[in-house]
Amino acid sequence: MLVTVSALSLLLMTGSGPSGQEMPFVKPSPAQLRLQLGELAYRVTQEEATEPPFSHPYAASTAEGLYVDVVSGEPLFSSRDKFDSGTGWPSFCRPLFAEAVVEKEDHRLLRPRIEVRSRQADSHLGHVFADGPPPTRRRYCINGVALRFVPRERLEQEGYGRWRERFTP
Image (cartoon, rainbow, N blue to C red; front, side):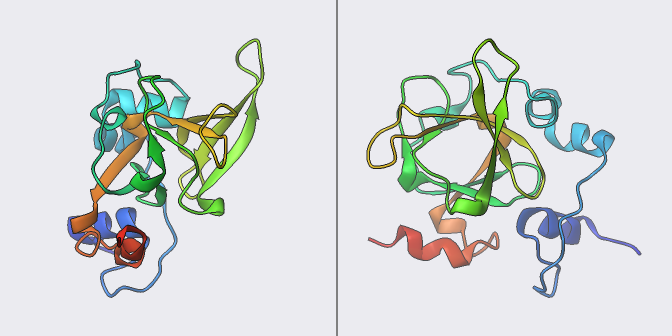
């Protein structure tokens, strides 16, 4: 079956095919992901690395829109839940919806932490800590290279129109 670049991009970004029908996400091969993501984003999302603090523009961004998984395009976080944690990484007080991310124990350091991964692509995103602002008191500390930002004004064009109501005043 021949898949055009635009159809493949649509599938990766939205989980929908060219006619709008839901299609299961198919994760690209490691070689394809390296080409698609670049070395740092590949190491972060696939090998659980961490980008340097204050190295990504999303950490300071205040633009309205959605943050989606750079691998699958699945919606993860809203700019409305983003805050400046002072850590140098994009931080959110909650995911877009409860099932958007998977949390699991991480024992790679001396103290256990809670790792955050995307549900569909199983991308390593970062960690969640219990030092965030009210009302959740949670800080989802996320690597900027694991995300792609979709501005509010482009939600429809990029297939995320169903989330538009989250940004109405």
